Image 1 (spheres, helix red, strand yellow):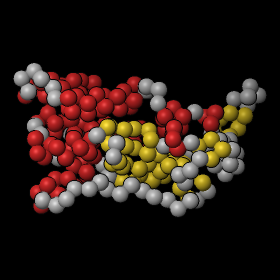
Image 2: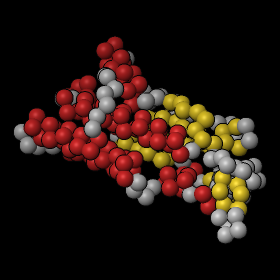
Image 3: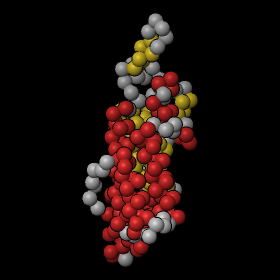
Image 4: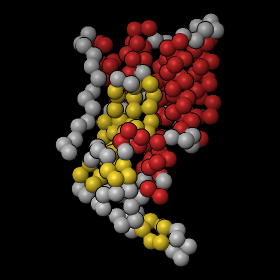
Length: 212
């Protein structure tokens, strides 16, 4: 699967029109569900819909002591650094997700922290801050493509890859992303394609684990 660059403004609608054309005006429910989830992810990236990313960018939740914070006479704090994060591209039972993991001193951590003097966020709550991007059931959609997929399905998968990679690029411009790890949508597509051709059993790649 080639990682094409698309015009995001109309591309998803164009793919949906192609799907309707292929299916004589009908859109299968599963395709519609994945396309809708992708549209929500696109809105998060393109239009800044309220989401967990807002919590990462909220400077009121940044720790000035760790990030060279300076308070002016008006009480406004400016930061010389942005918080460190690792970005993980993962496929879970829910679908494709992008996770952000903070750093504490020299290690990544995946637990709740409140007012820890060495944590770069005042509060870190994984339940609301870790998963910043999701395309629901994309792994199942990719797997089904190799059995019953068509050109519109492939275009939707390509589009999911491009949107997610651009989202990560945007994160890198706004925060101190020290590590990007995991499997991309294209990488997962290639993995499933290989399994399909050899007849091997399909399984989800392992999700990261940390020793706390």
